[in-house]
Image 1 (cartoon, rainbow, N blue to C red):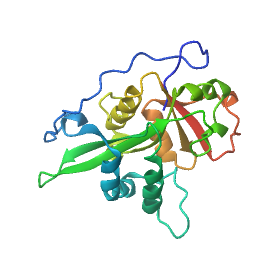
Image 2 (tube, helix red, strand yellow):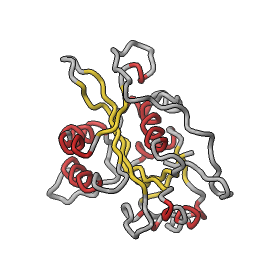
Image 3 (cartoon, rainbow, N blue to C red):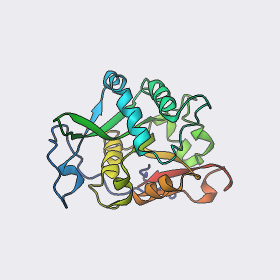
Image 4 (cartoon, rainbow, N blue to C red):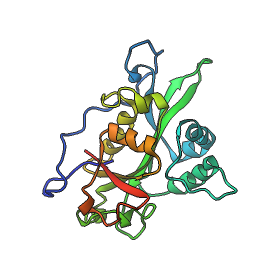
Length: 230
């Protein structure tokens, strides 16, 4: 997911991010026809909280992912296990942030209904999933300054993928906007799996777009493509 920077013709900057929901948002019962923010609020988890709620996050992945494009699990490991293992490593990266959306369950408990996470891509040679192979030069130049932010996953229920995708209060849009707003001036990027058409279409509906084919090195036959967010 991407923002754009002045001074680069290929990458034009959209307007400033709109207001995002603060930590004191209160979850209220969902009423028919009301926007999603009426029933769900967004907040970050600390590293310890991520570790404590890893089981819930793995269950969320199983419940929301159509094909889980980012995970290449070994044959003896299901996608939920692979996801938790990968997340346990990523959470230690400098600048890592994971946001959850929570709603109030039937017994009054808070239940994770969505999450998104990401981290700044540094220029120290540590890359995310081979991301450097997909970055055009104009984006690679941002890594030393920490102005490139990789969003690893946006896990949301199917209704968020298929309903009101263009609305600012769409839960996926709120999550990705909040991640980038918390890293002011950063350009967001993500890799999409061409085989997961459902997720690819959802990302496009939330404002993501592909760079021109001449801007990145992989051929059109490559299994993944780079997406950016305005």
